[in-house]
Length: 427
Image (cartoon, rainbow, N blue to C red):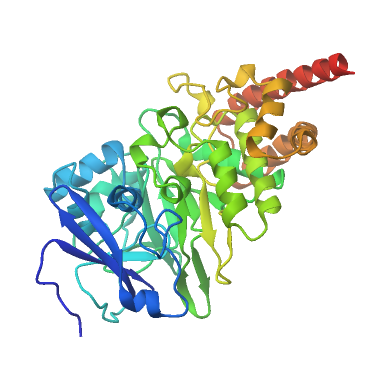
């Protein structure tokens, strides 16, 4: 039987229906404390590197972790307006939509979670058509209403769903989602196609990435991403715990960019070195991710677009890479990198000197960076061709593909000339 809180200022945090701790509101702020039952059970773990089990963390760090679970920017504003919640009221927004967050945590008003039937609401073809064209925004139109308690960080309109017998459905109550739908943007043309294509290139280059596909509606294409923090097998659907690097470092989502005090590549490397079971394996992934973003013009690769995933064996690894987009395709988006490489954010000014500094910043040998850069330069042309062929075979043509290819090849040529010139000078 559920134990209902008699205090409106308390929320309960659960992991797989186990009580982890409590959130206590203090005006516009709130605090988090681990439950004694969680600390005493043998399989306990800190839900964030910034929230150690010892309890030696600040309320600001706790608030940063949980606020990082919430939507951002205009998506948040629309949800708050629809639910009649003040835009700055983090606690009430967690209460309203904390049922299916990124990772494995759920936030409820009850100390215990009753085992309820898993329930979903099917999405009609008309709903999907309208959402795909941005009328209205899907996430704000759905979440918080009729037992739908979904929360996803980020500023882009996206919707967590599950597929049942080929039909897409919205989770209700505490039901888990397994897919993310990302919709066309009124500001940035062919955004779902952009992400699908760039992710395909990354996969061809051997980077660990999310599984992504495109689905056409009567109006637009939708990107369908398989959630890496869900396992679906004959045992059902299981959530995996994860945290992005803003959460791991106790940084507020509003400071996710390095220039605003957000995570740097050096800070991410320090976390990996201290907390991953095989640091050199994960550092190589981080290096490839940073270089890939440089080459393929992804200027929005900030601390929330990189995460740590807790496997079922308890070991931390870098999560498959997600939100890989050639932002340079859109002139209105600043081309400067969200995380600097060797002290530079302008991708056209990153050369061997900056990459050598990048090696120092990460605490690795220059040869490791040099080999990774050379490998990506040598393999990118073939990867682009292969990804183009796969994209067109699966989903047809898109005008965004040739633009991305042109931008990437230009950057590859510049970087190749720069490294070759510097190498001759150094010899």
